Image 1 (cartoon, rainbow, N blue to C red):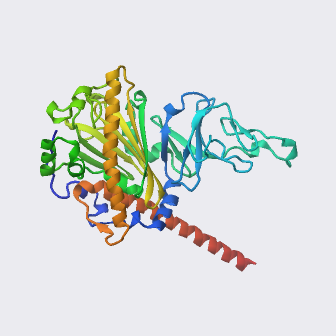
Image 2 (cartoon, rainbow, N blue to C red):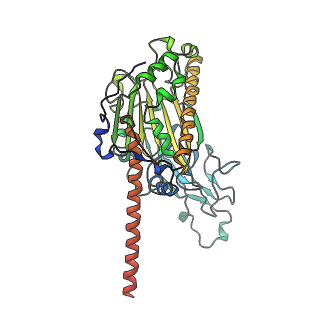
Image 3 (cartoon, one colour):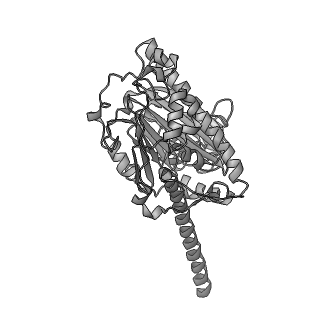
Length: 442
């Protein structure tokens, strides 16, 4: 395990002076009105990651996503049409508004394959491009034209196999939004890592608080010390820990860190099961036999400091998508879906190259189980945090240099909310002025 001394105060924060060094106001994580503004200004206007292309392996494949972060009851269908195009639609029949695709329980997500979508209520049918193709007893309607009633589409674009949607028709293209980090990650072999382990949990904490927990390692020596051996835990608690690199590009950010135990230099540092299976929290130790993961093959955004001790990069694509790459050749994704000011749904997916034998399979399962234990430790702490800041006894908190990405996250959320409020005020003023002019004209 490597240790890195903490650099001089301001060594990271001084690079982004606009973020300042003052205590950060966490009212944005407890104010219901602020959450409502975030829903409109952020989750209804920015690109949201909803899955991988591997979930749509053939023509007619589809899956649904519930999107409470966008609005209560919002549900979408993502599917692949006959041309191979991935599309997204509101999960809503154009006849009487029934939910179009669901199984036994309308609130649960589902997936499958079909030639067309048929409403359970009155059997209206839609093809894979969303066009209405059949109306039951069509002759009884009044001058109805099927071309006027397609499924309502949602903007949908794909980057490196990741599917994103946007509920704002005027939003910039996905690749422009992902910016320099998106460009710098192109070419990483995501498509090779199709073995997936998934976790989903309802967390009683604001969505930003969980991101806060994953963009700093200041907490690791304390919160997770029981996961290390006694000797290593004592070293971490005494020396502390500092990441290798931080970076911010517009609304997105990243943190780059050390190599951890993949594999450890001393096998006595890890548990017996980890020695046997060559795996642990940092993933399987054995590098898979694929191209694109060796140090000289990595795309430019990965390990930007070109540190020989590099182990993982975590990219935070605002608002709620984390992409975490590990040096042995696997990756994680996190999504944080707010359902209220103090609740959200946390989703985590671990992606590996498909195993070729039992040992590889078990090493991946061990990594997935170990990850879950760490995530539960973080989640439990966050719920305790939420209860206390919710008292408003204290609302401003000092952040250290290693917590620069927390500072950036809250600053960015406020920036989008403030922009939305200005635009809304301008629109209302223009409407009022228009009404005044019309009245004067009359």
